[in-house]
Length: 440
Image (cartoon, rainbow, N blue to C red; front, side, top):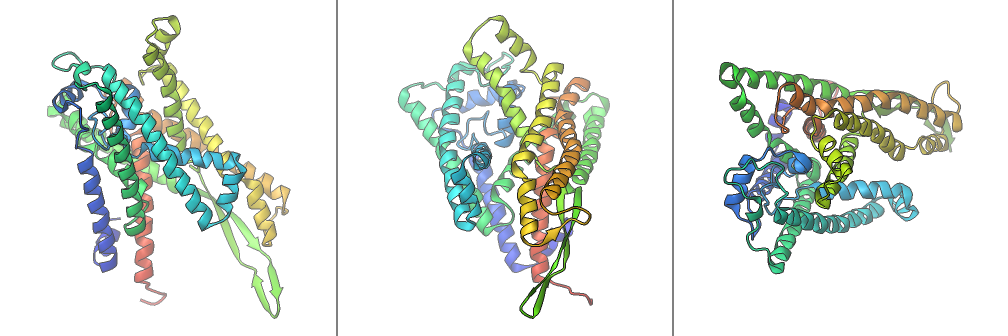
């Protein structure tokens, strides 16, 4: 990995792309520290220091690189765009018009991208309005811990004009993030949105590791620090192993005579990844678990159902929360794979171009065979996702760690997934410029 980056910096064209990407990352991190007009920055800092930074807003705060709880202009981070992309991807299966656009090629993809931008702006307006309302009510921080933190004073001026300015600034910040991500995709290295998500998650690693060192008791905290780093390296190795694992289904294409030339007769394979769904099931499950807690929090009710939700679905270390989270991840893994990979369509395309799986007849038997294989490899993939997502919660129970346990859950999946894809793109571009051939 480091060798690929070193070789890329020695190539002028790739060096420009890498420096451009680094410049966008710097701008993104600067915007994540500029507070929104109308927010008491001193009070926010006091509440951030006193809060455990967990609860309902933990996932969104991680995706924004800690900018959410600090109420900066990039407070929403990349989350509205991720949500809009997932919604459009799901609607493509349901709405025939979107499915037809997807099959049109580049022009249809550009149209769907435009719809994604519009939906991102709409979601940014809704989420920024909810965030400002939460900050006004003082419910943004789950446990202020007393002291000098007064959550009600985070937004001193609560006039309608000031609230509208805050919503407009946060929405504009989301638009700028979306633009920066597209710039990286066009003129930099890797997928821009994934790179910005990677930066947001990685930004919280140093502070989380240093917090573990400060709260440790053995050897001045260094024993806990190096133990967590060792566990993190083992988890990275496990995630890399599973993310790269795939089942290769061989496909043979029959020879076809067109005029005097023979075409086909080649053999290839269909790569089915063990974790075909990626990180999407974890995001779905986390978002769905926030809904009952949000309803109970904003209802202000002291009834039995609200207290039961507050006791069982807010704290991540509760057994009911952990079991529900795990089952939802397994369910959404199968759900997402079912809507993104269509065995019937793959079998029809193979039959159209004269392809077949050795030992399997073309048509419906091929579709049934692909569905059987996909179901078998999705089970270990979904269980793996559920176990990785539970690592921070298990650490919270066993070691009394914070909710920002660095190596585990969504963060480690994003770090490894985006890192692998970026390195693959760099290596592919290096091979295009420095092809070694068969003889060295």
